Length: 204
Image 1: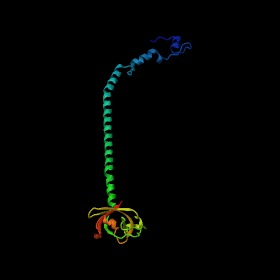
Image 2: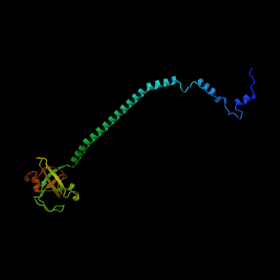
Image 3: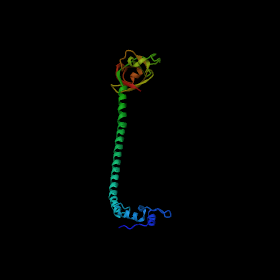
């Protein structure tokens, strides 16, 4: 049978005495010590920290290796991408300009017949002589005088001789691609007695 507790003891134990500081049973040192002893989550559990250290020790090199492998693969991928872009740029730089230049060259070259005439005051307003290196442009390409005073490079396709001459006149009877040359320009390509030469030409 539990013994009766004296009133003074009850008052002091449960903090009802105004002269003594109140202390709850759950906050007493003995109670806290018992809780720590009974709790499975001990803050200083040596076995727990030993296991944790072992796990970290095992996983650390694995994580380092994975990061290193990923870094190496990423660098390799970047290098391959850079090489692909550089190779593509080099191919475009080397091949494209050559193709464009060849296309323009083919588009600018014309072929026709080369004849000769005695120069006088031409359609471009110039007065020339036999000794001047000038040509009369065919009607289709004269285009109301747009090529006046421009220089053409004429080649005799029979002997590959070349001469430069300035456009100063129009040849209404010449077909497209053909030129009428001064005697001096014609003789630079062939004999006047020939009368007609197979020519090709483009703008200088």
